[in-house]
Amino acid sequence: MAWGKIEKQEIQSRVFAALRKNKNYRTTTVLGLPASYLDAEVFPPDADFLKDAPFAKAFMENPNHIGCHTLVGGESAFEGTHALERELLEICAVDMFGASSHAYDGYVASGGTEANIQALWTNRNYFMEEYGLEAQHIAVLYSADSHYSFYKGSNLLQIQAIEVPVEETTRQMTHATYDRALQEAQSRGVRAIIAIFNMGTTMFGSVDAIDEYIPILKRSGMPYKVHVDGAFGGFVYPFVDTDLRLTFKNQEVGSITIDAHKMLQAPYGTGIFLCRKGMINYTHTGAASYVVGGDATLVGSRSGANLIAAWMILQTYGHDGWKQKVLQLIARTDMLCAALRELGIAFYRNEGMNLVTMHASQIPESLIEKYVLVPDAHDDSARWVKIVVMDHVKNEHIDAFIADLKAHLTTAAYQDQTY
Image (cartoon, rainbow, N blue to C red; front, side):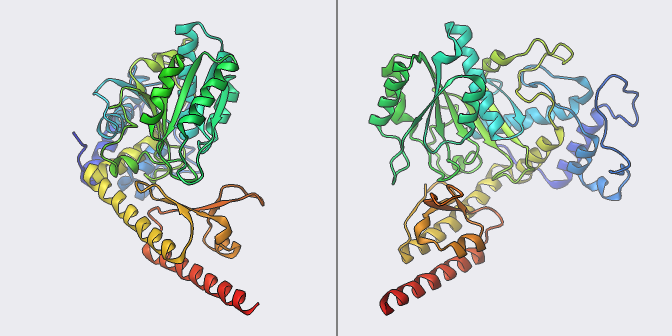
């Protein structure tokens, strides 16, 4: 059942009520917690706007969300906003990604990078504890278009990293290259695989066809775990593709990353890690004895304010309202693609995503700078540049870019004829 829309006044009331349920540093004698509200000399607590600004109020009161609150309730001083975090995770895990209620764990992380590393850490420890493997016998397997967090995570965790090439036009791994990568892994002493599948890559918005690769994983004979990186596409793709296989409805999927600070437009530092119930226990840190219930998260202390922003956004729209917003972005992206085709510009775009990646050779440097297009490399090796159709990218902005590009192509064609 999809989550519903909540009116603005009720959202404000819910957040303020949660904050009141937290311990208030100003009105309660709190002696033992190593934190406080934001410095009052710099951030006055009696500013008039705060009475109508629940996110700002939460930011000022500075609740700490250390720990994983789907495992235990956490520090009672912040039980009010901990409950909102659990509501946010319920929306994402159950309503968006098809998990059964209470059949998942997770937390609001600092971003997709942390959430992806949390997934690698969780699965690495699973293989070490359940199969008796050493770190070097575990590998993370991912496509060449995957996010750099998997390079970073494999280095931190001292597991092997194996990249699979993708086809230029489809941005997909082939059966042959995937099988070859698994054979290479085994030749390097790998005995277990953490398989990464993307729900919208950062540069191309490509979506991995998971069902094409699972049979190959099974044939390898190695145990494996599947993680879905939806940091870029998690708040877009599920609302466009209704037959999505990259969710908890697919029993192969063990964990998912999404980023609220991208398409959801929450503040930076708002990612989300989700996994099947019990898996996060493999990163439980018993040494955190002063934390209620211990800590299973990578980052430890976390801001309660950021998750409140994400919760407010989702509750403001509801499922249907958010889907409508996503479909508007997709329609604008369709318009951009139609115009590029008319101009003969080569590009890649997954139809369920709001990202278009063009051949850099066809886009002049002046337009790349003017419209702040992002290349795949910031040197002479750049081969692609991308446009992400987000909320601030309106039809008139797309029209202006296309007009400038058309003028450039017309001038270039005239010069070719002249010379």
